[in-house]
Length: 131
Image 1 (cartoon, one colour):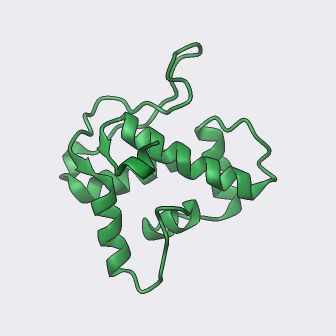
Image 2 (cartoon, rainbow, N blue to C red; image 1 turned 45 degrees about the horizontal axis):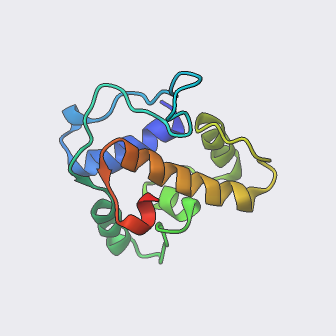
């Protein structure tokens, strides 16, 4: 499973029964108006409050992790490898066009893109995270 697929499965798996987990994510066809976001196949993600799931995980974690601003902290909360190598792989999956050696810019883009993809596929997010 892709890193993006793992993240989505862990978030939505906390909110829904295992049989409702999303399928492997795929990129939209070239030229698709929504090509900047990743589409999920064969599952409706509506009514999953992503922020509530993540806030619950953060409250139960002994570390002070800021998942709302940090892709590294978000990945740590989900128990997903947050190493630079894995973040670069995630950037490739989400079609990052920038320099992956500029990890600060890449991390900001990854977080925003992940929030966008979750919202575009029906996940509920506060306005400040969905834009």
